[in-house]
Length: 291
Ligand code: MN
Ligand code: MN
Image 1 (cartoon, protein in one colour):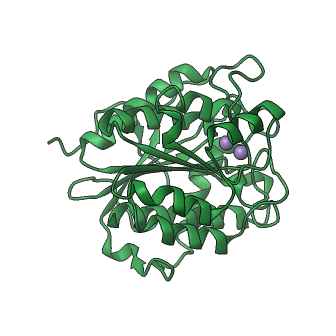
Image 2: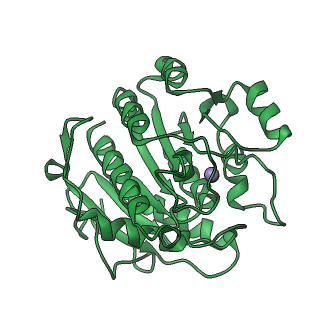
């Protein structure tokens, strides 16, 4: 097994996530950023998300009381930013897929920081090739089931539609979606994919224990009062305590990959959105390192 990612995929200049290293040898988890917001329709800025998460990570404790796990006990790498072309999403998604494949080839579990939500299907495709019975759990305010949006097939409003071209419908679980079109909600209910809350998700996932699981966290799942720094904020969302309950549920499962997307740090001058996003990232690092 090679111990370095191929050259030309990652730019490793800049800040590194707290406690990580550049060299992936002997690591369990591979973190990387995708600074892309090319299809963002409302308020751009998620390209600055990965850097902001790394920047504030040094202010966090390494210990997570909910999981009773400590980053100090985990060997993980921060490979830097995927080198992406400007403009259309298709070449970006190709790069994201290649980067995810490279992380998997190093024997690491991928954790991707966005960037806008459209990047997730590139990573999901690479992980699903490795794990054909992959289960996907989406945290999001939005259904993301449009077939195209403002002329873009790979818009962030289409993120889960693209994932449904990779995975069967019954392997996708969409947690507490609260915004979308009438058609999207009709589909959510008809398909049985809409999980009204964490208890329902826990029940639905119980028979799938042991199967490989991918968690995609669109940060607008959180309430705008606790996470205002996102492009399409949606009232009526969740709090840290809800996420803390969720990660305890996921601790019973086999998490093989995850992403954290849609942080637009410059929309929140207080910086608390980036801190919350960094704490979500810490939780996922610990889950990926221990499951
Ligand atoms: Mn989304
Ligand atoms: Mn969303």
